[in-house]
Length: 266
Image 1 (cartoon, rainbow, N blue to C red):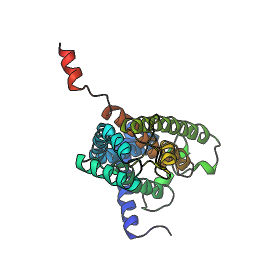
Image 2: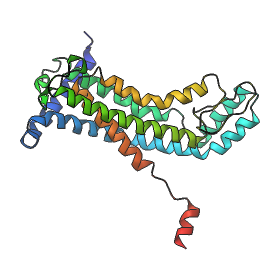
Image 3: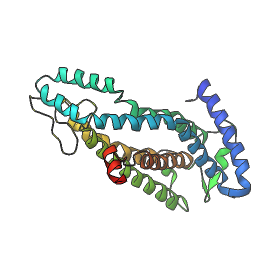
């Protein structure tokens, strides 16, 4: 069995909490109470880790502000990749811009997705959640179990939503990369050439240009992951991805510069 003591205990606690929330929502949501409970559970998780998301956006803004200095370093140490890498890391460190901070919100959600998978793939937790349904489809139903009846339209709707959200996220990542002046946190020119501008992918470091192209494709993996998850976990995935899109739209609103603010006041 995949279950072990800590995971089993966590699944039990989460299942009990979800069952109680479902009971509270039944008078209002009826047969969709469990699905609504999953959405609310997801929102609670995202609110819990929202401080990390705010820190991530601040870090990206710091790196974007450092883009001119990064380009100067790329020109200065174009023939010394090792020195360039250390100088850029030192620049980010002095400005408090951690290149890997953006991965934390995503990594912290993985355990919650695993718990949701366990709750609706096994009878673990003993809460009877496997019997719950949405639009007549079991919340433990997988895409591979068939698309007869309401399962087809329901999965089509959710997968389409994930694809659209993935496209929005990919576009945002490309813009963020262009804003920082590099497709990767530490762009290093190779072969004595200088880093190129344009789509923001740095030509240079072995694999840097390739990585710069691959990173914006990562959001689309949510669609592939959804194909092997039970319906309940797909709901979690759609909700958390939609929350991310909304959160990024709010946190990344263009900020007026001091000069523009002074001009507007005049």
